[in-house]
Image 1 (cartoon, rainbow, N blue to C red):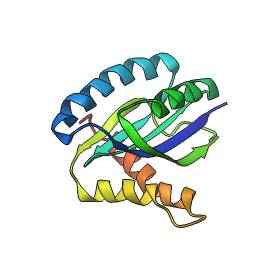
Image 2 (tube, helix red, strand yellow):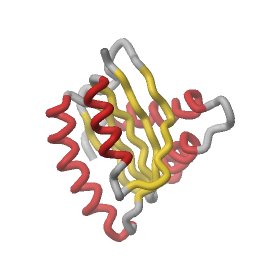
Image 3 (cartoon, one colour):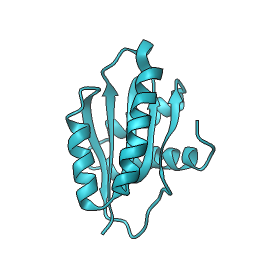
Image 4 (cartoon, rainbow, N blue to C red):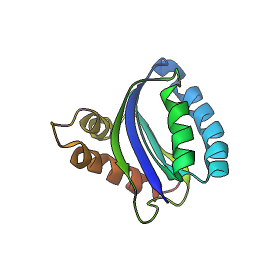
Length: 138
């Protein structure tokens, strides 16, 4: 069985430390996610984080607990949970890190959807993650 979890959050570290922190997250996550059979993508813009992960229920449960307990996040909001028939991502990667206003807007829109529109509001961010992940690594 395949399950997914997509969330958005705010980073707690100063933006002056963002490059080093994101590189550290990437190094640990690449190894751990590969070992767990988890695929997906993470996007970081202007202090906001959006991540979509997919894998076995046990692996996603384990990663979710780690993420929810991670001091580098605050205001974690689940924006999508699903049991798709197939994976959307071939591996796990950080797809974007930077300051693009449209990336920040996509994360913000997923974080604060209108009532009853959570799944619908998550779709632009998911499409952005998929589009960026089809390009070369950043």
